[in-house]
Every structure is written in structure tokens, then in C-alpha cells.
Length: 165
Image (tube, rainbow, N blue to C red; front, side, top):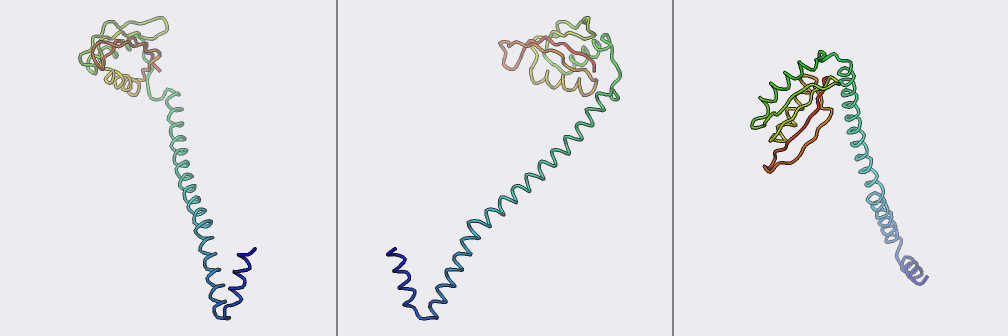
């Protein structure tokens, strides 16, 4: 309590005008400290949360639009039903055009109205682009994909099962 007593004695030793200045300075210092330590961090946190809410709302709106597109796609409005023999032809033609340097070993229909495709020495990136294009433009999707590395960098041997719809 010696420090408090020293401060009290010093304050009492000041003339009234100096006491007003010290009290005013203490109040100003307290207000500045409250602003910097409490108010400003709260406002910064609120601004960050508002930005996060706007971002989440935007993502939510995009998800709703995507859900609508998925419903339309599932309804089958975008693609005609393709039978397996027509799929074989589409796959053969598009693979030859989209997969340079690849060796298309076999394309055959299986019992589940799907088409199995064996391709050797295909560039992995080209194959992924080709499969994406098949799904977007023709409605042909990948049911199964098995791949193995080759001795050439970036090239693989694959066995695919593709199905319409």
C-alpha cells in the first residue's frame, strides 16, 4: 500500500488546477485504452465475420444453382439415351482424336450396357480431359478406371468401364 499512499500524497500536494489536469489525463488515457484494447478488436472481428457471412452466402447460392443443374441432368433432359454400340463408336472416334500417341487396344460392350476400353501409352492429362469432355458433351461417365504406370513419364496403361447416363 506504500505506492498507493505515495500517489495519494502526491495528488493531494497538487493545486486544484493540476488535479483537474491529472484527472482529465487519466480519464483520457482510460478511454484510449478501452478503445484500443476492447472496441477496435471487436469491430475488426465483426468486420471479419460479416465478410465471412457474405462469402458463405455466395457459396450457398452457387451450391443451390449447382443442385438445380444436377437435378436437370439427372432428369435426363440433356442427353439422349445412348446404347452400347453407339457408345463404342463415339468412344473410338473421340479417343483417336483426343489421345495422340495412345494405343487403343480394345473397345467392347459388356453385359451391363457398358463399354470396356483398353488403352496403352496414354498421356494421363489428355485422358482426364477426354473423359471430362465425354461426360459433359455425351453423358458418358466413368464407372471404373484401372491404371498402371509405364516406363514413359506421364503415360499410363488404362482399362476403363464407361456407361451412358
